[in-house]
Length: 343
Image 1 (tube, rainbow, N blue to C red):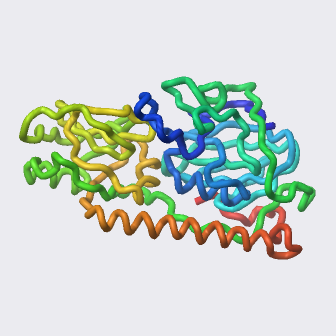
Image 2 (tube, rainbow, N blue to C red):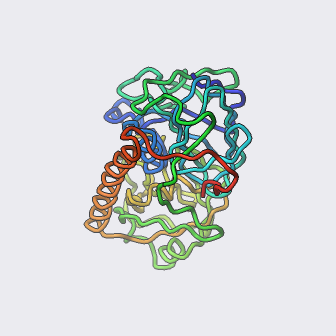
Image 3 (cartoon, rainbow, N blue to C red):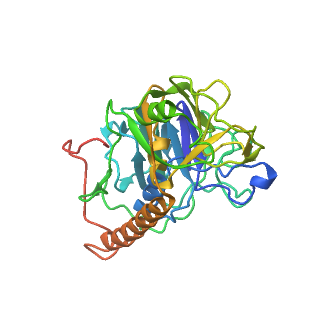
């Protein structure tokens, strides 16, 4: 079990989403940063779609009632395990009774904590993810609260103590942290209303003139910048939308939809961000400058296939890493103060 001493700003149970129910008004939801979530699960030997904790900006304080493997990915953050710095992007053995505590994320918006065996909450419509607006899934359909106790499933990795205290392997997964003070460029596939925008409006979107407004959450991110003119042509009928859809409401300030988006919308659609940039979208926070670059759909598909091959190769490499040493687990070393923080 995982005991919640303090919940943090917004901590929820998420997996890779509740697919196939948009006709019922339910968005897929799931982890905003799918790549970071999948990698966290792979690091501890879980299926990539196992349930984990998504942590937003300021993290919780947790107690692991039994020992197990954990992994932290996502935005760089200060995390301690029993008052020692916890490295990210690698599996970590946490002894029984371990206390985890988060500071704020240094950059980015979200992080992911996977535990061996996954968070064992009930499946609702094929998913364990929390849908905050529908009030279903996850832990009682809501963010975590102090006093919650989350069940953990059976781990695929050895659970005997590899060391008396916390320890981790000498290897880690390479990753790219969000660049500090740099506009985030999102590649997108132009939508039906892109070409009707004047050149000045398209240039504003391409040059980082917009920033993420403080009104942002998992449903969408409002952008603030120069007001864009409404696209020419007749009023649009409502149509399906998805994560990454870039809409233009009447006030001229674009909205970039997230994973908890509404299922249909009638605002003009300027485009949809390519799936390869979804991790960047997930890590945007209020005040971040953002720019958009059109990308042909064939190139976006090629980049997506390449990323999926990379994730597949990583899964194979991690299985091999776990077979090093005695054939059941990797070589480990206890914390000695020389490890860098997650970055």
